[in-house]
Length: 382
Image (cartoon, rainbow, N blue to C red; front, side):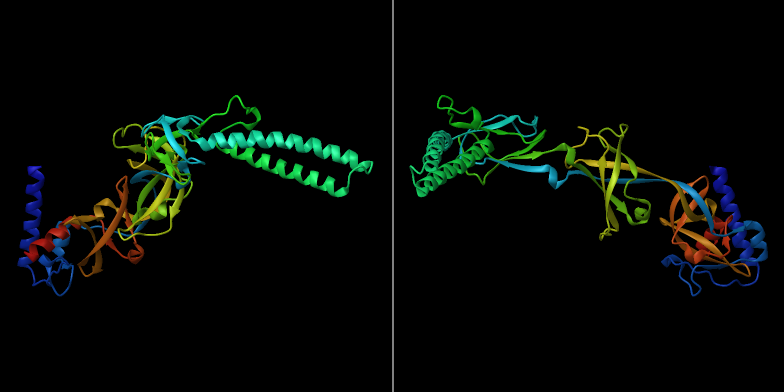
């Protein structure tokens, strides 16, 4: 390392002394405030300096490269898989069988509600059922009597209307009982109950509990917020430079910070066509198979492999870095070289992608010697 630094200082010193001993050179300028000049970012070399620096030239090149895009974001749940569970009818909470975070199965009893109105509903059903049977018998009797003209048409019509009304009422009561979880077909005067059970509509876990034992609830009150893990989505931030590489349907690998070595396959299912103020967009992905490793709100990371990506760029030695920015040098002719800022992309096998490189086409660019040119600019500025 010491030898390399010493060699560099010797080359720079030789270049500097050569420039001083020759003809007066054109003033050097650099876009940084430390390198201000009329001819911005341009350096003029003598013939002797050209020999010492060993400059070679190249041009912008096309290359097919492999790229891995790294994304980060959060796990979330699709709104369609977040459910607010309430009771169809009001009553007092008799028991709660889960806690926050509890996993449950579809059909599992989450809570029990008690109220006298449940008794009344069952009584109404049984009474209406008995009345319907009586109305059915009366209707059949009136049909027989009307056939022999022993009863009037009006009497038959009344009997038919009574039967139809009670039948509709019974169907309505039966549906109400079904909604609150009571099987009307098996209901009789010996098994009337004052409590109903609140069942889980799917398998998942409890996100929030809004009630407590003994509390009176109305039908509009939410008892639980339930999460269906099948609706887990991954919201990934995509920076502007990578937006064109991310496509719907791409396979990706995701992992969390707690277990970075364990990666799970997922697929990008949606892209938000919008660049936010921070210069990024959002990609929505879904796990290929459900996993308990990811929960709502967790920070996650993802990797996307881009195969056969057609890019334009330069050999890595053509690019020099200074103050966290990247630059190249253009050959203007007559030993004059202009420093140009560039935005770099991926690097692979000694080749670096140059983003927005349209303006560099057909230009002669320095390949070897860019660092020496930068040192000359710095020394002259100082």
